Image (tube, rainbow, N blue to C red; front, side, top):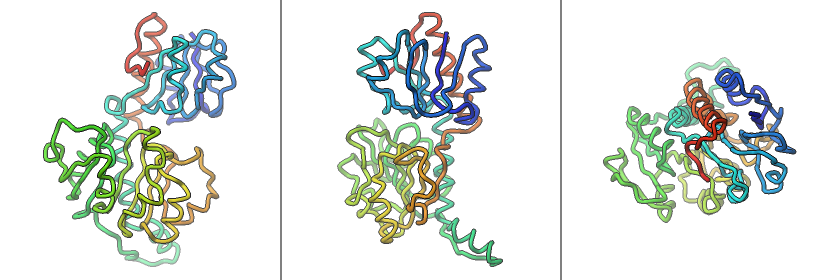
Length: 315
């Protein structure tokens, strides 16, 4: 059994070392980057951030499984894989500890922006104490765009901060707003209302053709000038140029970004000169979540090795 890990050896918080420890008899090879030129000779592919196209799948001579080490499968041509009899599976955020870890990072970004992380750095450099004055989360409104595993984990953690919460979900939830701990739940048609009510807009939904550039010039204009945008999901949800215009003009107060339009982003990108608190796609990279992800990935590889059916398949 040969497995290809489409990333550097040390990517994703030591995932490769842990999966090798879990599967000592399986040959696991890292590409060293986020590009794959051929799938020849491999039984399983762990794509990470690599795009898996129909052309690339044509190079596969014995591939049985594309196993993502997270939830996102938007980079995989699932119909092309299905046509070739290749299973595609992921690790849902709410079973691995990933959703909990992402929710914690959301709060980090919210607090960092609220307390003016740039102003604090300037005060320390200048020897000033007691500056800048920050904003408390208490009494503010958090708008959650997406009420899946990450959104629900964030609701649970935000309850102790005395915030008001509103949300949007693609499908009608089984629970009502009060049952989820929200003041209001809308549909995608109600996005403008959520944006206008929120002091923090948190994106925790998948990237689809419908959600590509969900936040553009038009939707960013619905936000309060003192509000912050937090993106924990996929860079493609936000139109980069529109976000820079909103930040430069003061249309919004700042942004917390763990995901980007290109990954890795150019650190010299002028957008980072604005009030942007950025982290390098590490929201789900914690000790707890990596252990949970490794457990599911290893189980699916063993199932394929034994001609069994992998769990959490998209096809």
